[in-house]
Length: 327
Image (tube, rainbow, N blue to C red; front, side, top):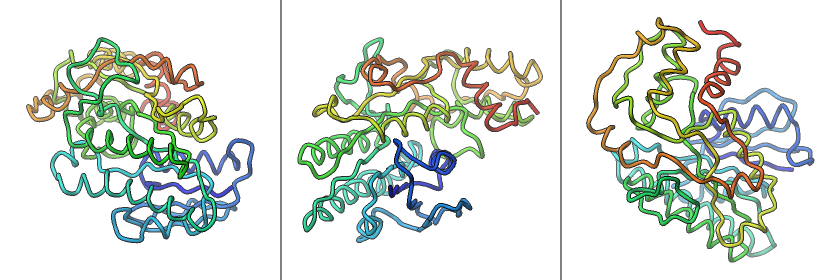
């Protein structure tokens, strides 16, 4: 089996790569080739598996077609400009998040013109496709009313994925990821970055900035759960999806106050003192329009799983990133 990961240099892409290499197989089929692509070539993971690391900008002419030269069986499309950056740079957001995805789908269609080709495409969408007015728990079939450019870009891509799948050009499945916490590494430009920062930095003995108030509520899952979502989506029988090709992933609805309470249980008062409250009206406005709770029963019925407590999310971070102990 040949697997292509687009966006392989990002946090989720790196973790997915590590998991695939460790397993050596996907869905019971041995991995025979692994192509890792990002705008900057990902580092070679060092494995006996045949790995090709390439630099590719999907929005550039011909880039998508070149990635399909080996006709990968499964494509994980993780590449995107994050929410805050897509809002700040309108043109860049649409070029990468929309045009890149459209060109990938079109390259897949064209690859199948001479000889049949219909790979499984796992596309990471976002809960940002939903915006006010919202019900208390948002079902999969709630109307898309995104309130950010990022959300609009993801919503359009969901429609493209469904149409190209309907026509038989690709076997697509979209997964709307919760906000992934606790993200390892350094902060990025995502407006949601503080959700991870107020756990990650204090547990590492560093100061973290909190730009919103404690009552802000959001939908979360861990990086560990995100990898599980991707692998399950790659193996899932897509027949039950029908024409509704995108699913909201299960997660945990929690407030900032509940996050901080979990931090206290693992890091004590010392960790809490490292949170510096610095209100940011721009981030507060963006976050205020985000959904807070979901009915993910459609995904759970299909076997997707996530954490059910914030303590479990913090525990996963400590085990996976801190060697099982708080520094």
